[in-house]
Length: 449
Ligand code: FAD
Image 1 (cartoon, helix red, strand yellow):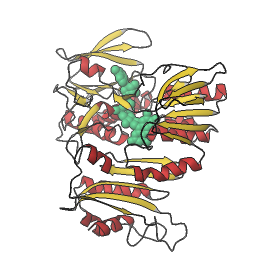
Image 2 (cartoon, rainbow, N blue to C red; image 1 turned 60 degrees about the horizontal axis):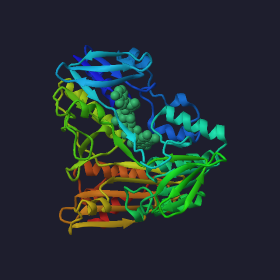
Image 3 (cartoon, rainbow, N blue to C red; image 1 turned 120 degrees about the vertical axis):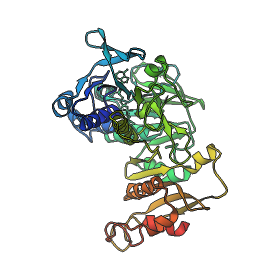
Image 4 (cartoon, rainbow, N blue to C red; image 1 turned 90 degrees about the vertical axis):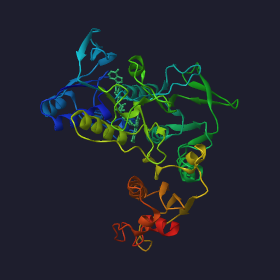
């Protein structure tokens, strides 16, 4: 079998490695238009902040390692420019030589990811205005900060990447202002759960301009950038990072006539198969089912991309596997505060018109471990569940320690269709320095039940 993979990072690389584990014989070729494969996108902000000092640390696997360990032929600087479905053939442009050649496939896997949204405003292409997706972007940002001795940064968008960039730019010694169009940062979460993040950002000297949007950028004679704001105000900065979300890369799929979903992602079934039975698609580029509502959703996270890559490889090599859907389980650190969530928020349920009478929410604020043991920190936890049968719908938590552990446990409960009664009964680790005999997860179940 000849398996060709487009995109060599999270979904693509997972698919390649899994396919090799399942088959010694398959011929596997992975094409990546950038200069690197299998790099840690999630680590990029931390390299900008010098927390991850060496760029090499971000390289999870090299083309040589893929060749030697997995016998996978990796071609970097190679852009797949078209798919000829009738002849089961792709056209590949070698970006080093400029030449284009073709390759035949039995199975084709698309994992082209998602590109940062480009705001359609004047000055978006000015030097000093950046987005962040890959190693070359990271290098450009680092070089700009060093070469210009930047002191002030403007981060447009207060989502996960915007917040990670903020913290890391502060660590590099810059003063940061965040402009966020919504009334709170981390717009995916419910507003009351984000207030510890607002306090933490202020404590660390970050200025917040909420409910505000940027209308354009202008270069100033002193080399700085002026950002115009919708309210009529302005912000001055030496560097601007635009982090306003990502959009699925669907050009290749669209041009090949593959079905595109209503949210703009490649449409796949639960086996990650596109509308063409010989073509699979995974990762940020695809629409998948929301585990709770069953509706289509776009969730650009590394975990689902990796798992989907494995599902595609399994199915291609004859295993009966399905992707379970996504819950959007995510975590973000903002200086000393951790915020995590899984499942649906109250805000999303209301937006979808699904906030039913029998849905209930509870809040609790337990210590992350036994209060009598020194160093207990408060976790604020919100649980949303169905009153009718106790089924858990979503959970959000914020605090300084032990936040993601509780959200992970509840995430697994959601994925197993468990109820608040199961949380009440969950048997979890306990010693005073780690938890409580009634862990916050048990407490949530006890309050809700
Ligand atoms: P990608 O990993 O983006 O890989 C797609 C690759 O395909 C790209 O390298 C691209 O160059 C290549 N490509 C596209 N088109 C072609 C073509 N025609 N020919 C050849 N190659 C092509 N997720 C988390 O869960 N936790 C985090 O903490 C987190 N932090 C992040 C921080 C940053 C700065 C970024 C950018 C993302 C972060 N993510 C995080 C998201 C996570 O990285 C993505 O969800 C994941 O990488 C998606 O995998 P993918 O395979 O779909 O796409």
